[in-house]
Image (cartoon, rainbow, N blue to C red; front, side):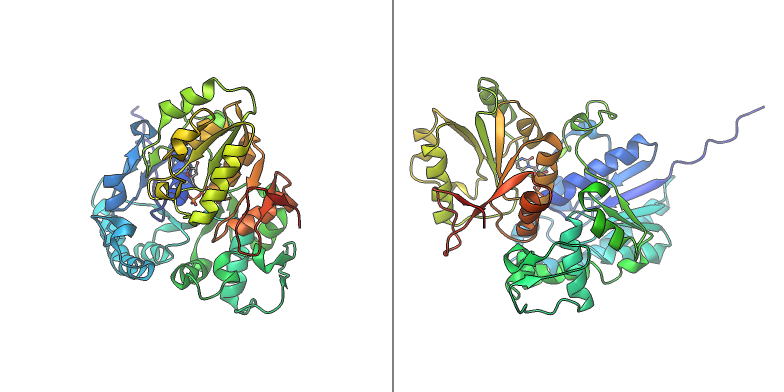
Length: 409
Ligand code: UDP
């Protein structure tokens, strides 16, 4: 007797916001799904697919959509407002066209996992009657703050120095996401983060990129409203459970990593002797802050590996790279997981992006927190006071962390 046709593989689209900190966790989640026999397609924007560095071994299919800025992406728009309003107009049509096109192939789309920063993607999924999961790339504490703003429980601008929210430690205003603490500044991004909740009740699932034990109270609290699942930390498998063979990178970089330079430089250094410094893919530091960090690393007795993106490089003191070459390496991008897991790295001076935080936590590297904006101040609070895996450097009255760093309240 002939075997019946094997059950068709379900086809899931994974749709991240086009930024490094969003693509990494969602691409990693895609790889995990793929390893379970699911057909997975990532959906980057046209510009990202043209400009990024993909690792072909990731074996995930790509289908592109337009954000309206196919030639230059975010940088092509005059303002964040211009970028977002164009994307919000072009994106839904482009995503719908893609789902429709795939509907005429052997693999129509069964489900969409969308970044919560793109809530209109859920409306598109509903239009086609496919299943949906909302994927949050920020911490539950941060999501909870925006949820309370959305619901009107947290009135802005804030009054008083502290905020008390259900299932969370009391937060000083300076420990809230900066878009909330400094209401009105970065209004376009603030609106995007609050709007994450505009239709989320319609999603079949709500995924968080961490594990339950990290924020059990908030997860339990959110589970009262939604079908919640903690699916993280979404870190390449080799650093966690090793269930996926050869899975040591996320698989996509918006900047070209200086892999050989970094790893051969690290290889000669004594255990725990190197401070690794990075402020992620977006944060832009003031010149005064850059100089304080530069002098602190130069004066310190020990090595440093500092990621300074091309656009930040002009802020370094004159001749700095040459003058510090006996103890420091400055690169424009590095393989961060490989660096953090290297035994010569003893400390991570970080902006506290949520991915960097989860990576340092997973690899056991203590953090010196120097948050800059958005969710990073809330992450830094948790790093120091809740998870106790690092300490915060305190800024002075001008908002600058000086080279004679001060810690504690
Ligand atoms: N990253 C990297 N190389 C670098 C700096 C960062 O691969 O030189 C990766 C890092 O491992 C993390 C992501 O870029 O996964 C940055 O995300 P995060 O949430 O920490 O910060 P963001 O860039 O979103 O501010």
